[in-house]
Length: 111
Image (cartoon, rainbow, N blue to C red; front, side, top):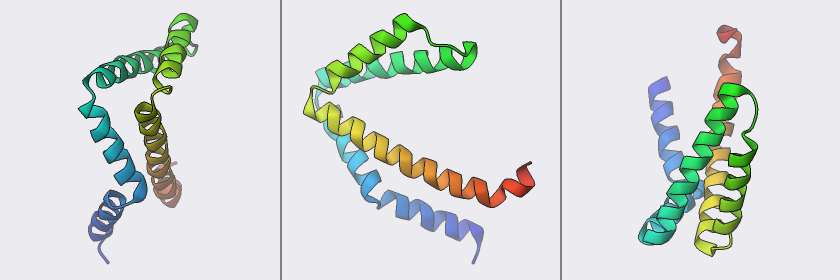
C-alpha cells in the first residue's frame, strides 16, 4: 500500500472520528453565539500571548497567566464554552497521539 493512500485514509478516519465531529459541532455552535465567540477570541489571544512569552522567556508572566485563568473560569461557567473546551481537548489528544505514533515510527532516522 502506498504511504500517501494510507495518509489520505487516516485523514478521512480523523474527519469521521467522534473527537473531530464533536469539536466541529462545538465550534459551529460557538460561532452562532456572537457574544460568546468574541469572549472566546479574547481568551484565545491571551492564551497565545501567555504561551508565546513562556516559550521565549522560559517563565510565566504571572499577571497575564492569572488573567487567562480568570477568563477561562468565567468562560467554563457557560455550558456551550465548556463543551467547546472539552471537545477541543479530546481532539487535541487524538492529534497528539497520532503524531506520537508517527514520530516513534521514524525516530531512528530523525536522530
